[in-house]
Image (cartoon, rainbow, N blue to C red; front, side):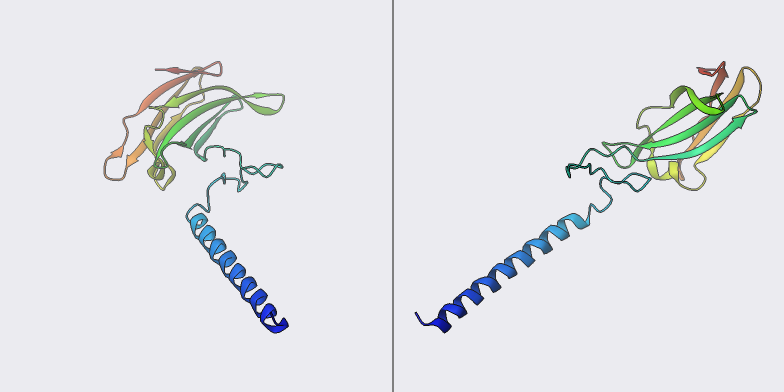
Length: 169
């Protein structure tokens, strides 16, 4: 075999290898394009650890309401996106008490059913229909949330916050 035909054959093989590599990169890029937010939390961090392996990402969450009652209690409502159904969500009500100059969680309850809410209405405009509190002991608390724009608001749920604990009213 002549030197020029051997050189041509090597160049053809390199070109074919490069073409296959580009095709594979394109296919993998297209497959990953639909999942660009996978493994990303609200803080923008990804679920990739120092070993390079992807860890399970924490569920996406968004605080939808908060109230501070005097200096005694801080109450928050947080939407938690379902890890099984991206359209579903749960709502966590948390009570914090001041301890050593910082807020420390003293109790938490789920408002309604686990994954019983819809993520997009719950995290959109007008999601909180009623979030009423009072600075008394016990502190009454009323929560009503948007089910969907066409259905409207949920029936109000009433709680009492007494000594940092949440009780159904």
